[in-house]
Amino acid sequence: MKKIVMGLLILVASVSAYATSGIGIVKDDDFKAVGVSQDNIERVKIIIERASIQYKLKTLDKKALEIEINKYILDGTEKNLEKLNELVEKVGLLDAEIIKDRLKYQIEVQKHISTDQYLKARELSLKRIAGSAEKQ
View 1 (cartoon, rainbow, N blue to C red):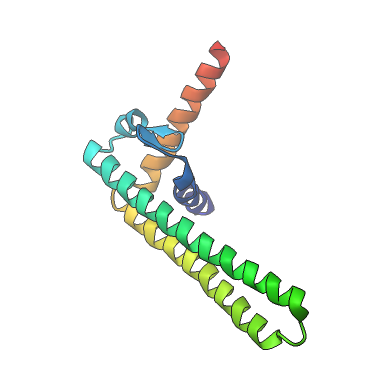
View 2 (view 1 turned 30 degrees about the horizontal axis):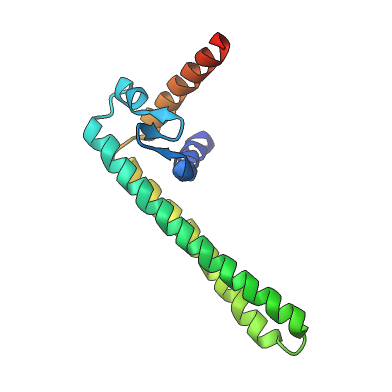
């Protein structure tokens, strides 16, 4: 079970590695080889693109809050304690939203590509990469 969860987290975490001919290191052909339809591959790419945009926006919001926190710390922690507590809570809520979004997008992806299919396609891509590295 732990391996399956990690595999799915890797899939969602590879959002930033989104490519037009695949998802991260896993190419469309790898997914097709394990029985995923082109339609499902395209749907997953759209889901991952949406997830990536949401993640980047929330990360920017979190960075802005962290900068504001640092400003209040430099201005004096004790006199700004109430505002600092409020900002820290906002950062915590954003972190929770990011985790919830990952789970939500994971569920959406699983509707189109099963965990088994992803792990098998990933194995194929790793073999392909290892084979091309040996040729060089």
